[in-house]
Length: 421
Ligand code: UD1
Image (cartoon, rainbow, N blue to C red; front, top):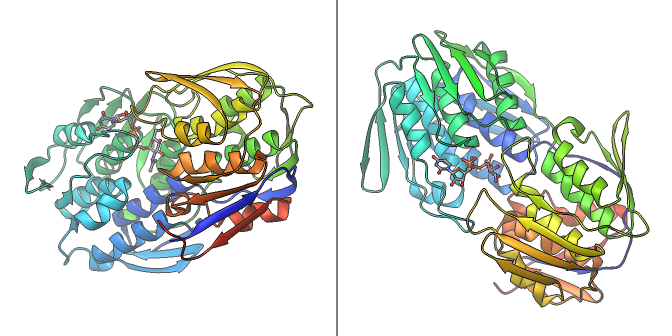
């Protein structure tokens, strides 16, 4: 297993090109199943989750090739097993979003139930409810969801909560249904909008993505296309906080500023200077960081995927910050590790009170999930003495070679192979 060692205390300075968005890329990879002919995806980040999705598509019979520019040809899927096995779904929950495309285009799918995950239970009942409304027959057997439908029919679906994956799964299924579907209380995240743009380019008729109601007029077929993935708002937000907490000044090239309003607003509340430039976002640390309260909410609210990183900023801010997590039930696993580094954090239910500024001191810490790992990198960048981060595979799911990305900005960060687990 790899470990990352950081010697903190260096202000990050310079420019960084923001990579393609993980969560958009993964769903577009799934959506390629719907197209007749090959799809080419550009600006795909080199991440283990993207490779896992590639492996799943290959298992389903797709020809998958390339790196950074990916090609996906689903010609062989029709004669395959149409099954997403447990070994792959358990490593990446987003695998369940092959259900919608497989069912819509091939009439059946067998997908392992994902089970719980480090940050919470994360059920898929809303995905199944939506697919059932479109006419799928669904059975749960031997830990798998088995779905069948000769032809899906357009229908009304009212989601109980705005789920990103659920919205995407059902939206993809509805593209090839007979008639029109009206999906209500849907997620409005930029990755839902990006998927809708991609599907429309393939020939789908989707309107309303980015609002609480999406309408999908079913079409007979979709075609494979060429598409460039949008930049990653979470990678951009994470590096913005890295600049802010180290007293730095960084230009985030191609940062998707319009998708980052909630994060930029919180940075500004903490007195960080954020300047929208023609080609990105410049982030300059203030002499003194102010405290900041934040509650995670569905988009356009503050993203849960930035909560752990914001907490590191709060440890360096003057005064008390209150951070509340409302999306996932177990998403404070970074707290004990940050406390071991000297952070003053008190958790009560889903609320964390953070007092700052506290000097952090480097030690050995354990990554527990993707964004928690990112917060440990940020903490390492401000800590005095070396910080050794174990279980880096969590980080590699969502951040491409973080050490190679941050070193040109001045960070003293290195990866070592073969560390203990
Ligand atoms: C996606 C993102 C993830 C992000 C999350 C919330 C991808 C690949 N992952 O995950 O990075 O943290 O959105 O922004 O895009 N829920 C149910 N039943 C369901 C579906 C969801 O109860 O059928 C609940 C979940 O447990 C959670 C909430 O709804 O509490 C939101 O989850 P959801 O938006 O579905 O997250 P994901 O799509 O899994």
